[in-house]
Image (cartoon, rainbow, N blue to C red; front, side, top):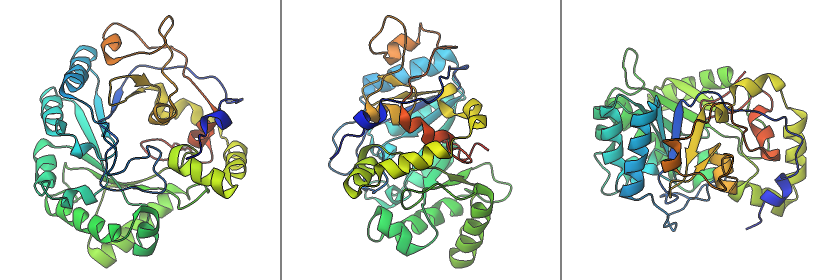
Length: 320
């Protein structure tokens, strides 16, 4: 696999600083039941890295001490971590809003047949990957038969009230382009998703988030192999919108890897670019109990243009 960090280190991306910490985004491990082409984590069924119980306890300590409002759980498939349900229950008991970044197919995995019911009972917000509303495009990006399994998972969530009008159970979908292009306008694409999924399968959901593919890890390596890395970076840079800088997720979010080390975002985590704190080469969850990050500089590289290009891209979808 081609390393993309050497191609990204030199940058003229504008310097940015942190605001108040609002969200702890925790990667519970890189193991996944899928191996998607666009995955910036290089997740797969063969990965062994998983967050242990002691680090999960530190996550809860930080949520409690810093009064963090949002716990955003990701992976891999975060639900495959054996401590996932304990963490969700404990965070919800603290009154924390919990988001599960779900690939949908995990809801149908053996041993996880009651996962959808668990998420509903705990009031977990589900943000689910579905890069298209057509079988051909989804299976091309995520693997054979993934679309059918995703629709089955969505049906389970809908049956429990997720995405239904008047329900408190939130279901959001995530769109990624199939290749090195910017996402289309989020609003019109959301309307198309709702029409197509509703008419074809009776599926309902709350919001669609459009995310740009980052030129790192598996996707970035593929671009290098195809000779498309430089043109994609040129596209991102040319589409930079400075108005998006105030809304980028790294200003209010801290990303935590499976060992408990901290990064400004999930993408920096995958590139191994640590969060910057004076006097510390690496910052751990335990340090976050005594460190105020407000106003701290954010570590940047050329991939940051992926978050500010066009309408912008964040874990909550378009910024503009």
